[in-house]
Image (cartoon, rainbow, N blue to C red):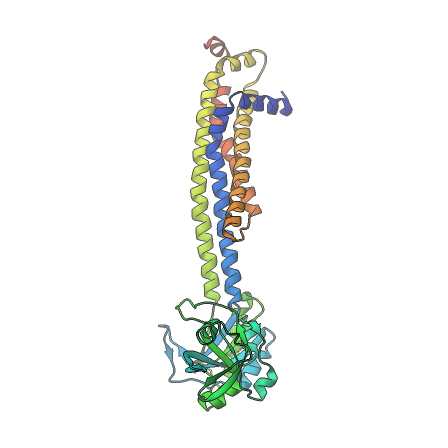
Length: 403
């Protein structure tokens, strides 16, 4: 019997018992749908978190004063004093995209009769590019504003809400330490840090204005820099370290006098958690597939008993053991593949519905579809083998006598 005839006969046998075939396939359908959902949801969550993470400065380095000890504490007994020359030198590194001096201090900000305690940040225009933080209303200040120490600022959403309410802040004047600053723009919302600090509760002014009018010195607390991709961070960290040691004549056996913080460990943690979740959820889904496979094996064993006489007749007219075995394996495989296809469609359908209801973008993984489909086929062959082997080993004479 050729393959085409085997497929036709196998499909005919399955359609004779539609209800039983459907119920048998449910385990495979649920298992495959679970594989699609678990892998796709995990991948979607990973992509979403990575995208949001990169939008909040995931490609940045923060160079702080003082040396970080093995215990994680910062020793400021020996520290270097950053200069604008350091910032420019870091910015000139090929691997660095942007770099800005950063200093901050808590001060009351006033608008008419309303005041609010906020973080006053002194920085250059590059600060916004490093942190990927741009105005939702208005404009950034310019390099010329920095050079001229202009009294201009950008404010975070929290400051805008606390001071202005429903008034448009752009063009208004706010007062910090008796100096009026024109609000050029309102920055987009970026939310809280992992430690719970409200990043939108900030006023950013040119660092030159900050030095002259807020602290009265040229001190730079830290330097923020960004690279093109997260993969560039380790190399950039090495180059910045070497550069600053050379510029500040740090001897070979001396500690740096500064330390660099990056967000690379967060990316690694995201990827690690994602892999663990994929394995965990995939394992749970695999159990469903195995249960479905056991269901197929049980039904195929029942089918062998029910069709004992048919098997005997086929053997009597010349069918070989191999033909009987292949026939039953194909039936099990077909049952499993049909269930797998239905499971794939069910999984994709659930993802589409969930995406429409929650407004979250879900990504259907092609690899998940292929893995689920192949696994369903393997389950069909594996659990169909024993019933097929049992059918092929039947004694033709005893099979013909079976009632």
